[in-house]
Image 1: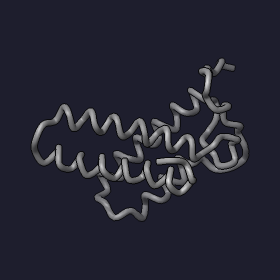
Image 2 (image 1 turned 180 degrees about the vertical axis):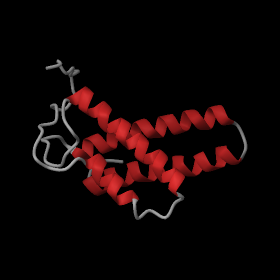
Image 3 (image 1 turned 90 degrees about the horizontal axis):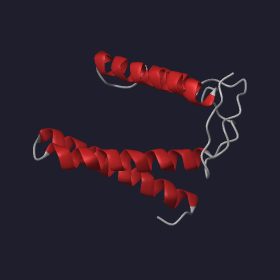
Image 4 (image 1 turned 90 degrees about the vertical axis):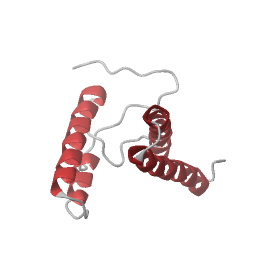
Length: 123
C-alpha cells in the first residue's frame, strides 16, 4: 500500500466508507446542465481525472462522511481558484477572454466570501 503524505496543519486523510463518489454525483448532475455536450464531456473528463488523482493521492474516493471538514476544504480550494484566476487576469491583458475570466474571478470571490459569511467566520 502506498504511503500518503501529510503536511503540518493538514486535515486528517479521508476515511473511506460505503458512500458514493462525489465526483460521480457531480457527473450525474451534469446530465441536466444546460450546456453543449462537448463542454459537458470535457468537464466529465476532467472530473474523472481528478477522481483518479484523489485515489492515488489519498487512497480513497471523495465521499460524504469522510471525517474531513468539507467547509475548510471548499474554502481552501476557492482561495486557490481565486489566485489562479487572478494570475490569468494578469497574463491575459484586455479582451473578451479577460472579461469572461473577470466574471469568473468575481464569482469565485463571491463564493469564498459567502462561504465565510454563512459559517460565521470573518470574511
